[in-house]
Image 1 (cartoon, rainbow, N blue to C red):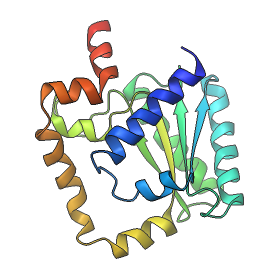
Image 2: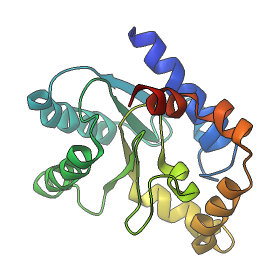
Image 3: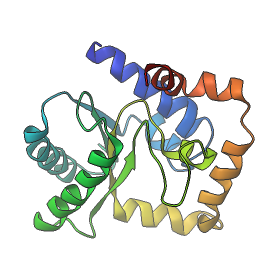
Length: 186
């Protein structure tokens, strides 16, 4: 797969799923203003922690007006969800050890994402399923600011689950074509 193909898939997911289905009501403005940086990582696992530190350092050096958030697309690494999930602990450790706890947080997305106490086919898992494993670096101050202005922010997860439950099989095939490919290849 070419880098441009991976980026096209992630941009499609961002525009059609995350923004298009309003899963994150705060994503459309920074997307319109080109403040979302999509970073393709295609190295090996040993290179991922230094890459994560570099991405956080770059984000920290910029104002939110320049770069609100960074999406690190993991191509050909951490494809197994359990391994990816284990790496999230290491990523959190990086934030803590680098002095960025309370400044940045990581949202997680994966093609095989599965919330605890769910079955793989449960629709709520679709809210965090992406074409590739993703580490989404979020500014906590920006998140707090938009949450304070959003009516009933605690309803967002439940609303997203309800939205996923209303999708037809055709909608899912259109919005999540990589899931169908993954099902056929397993």
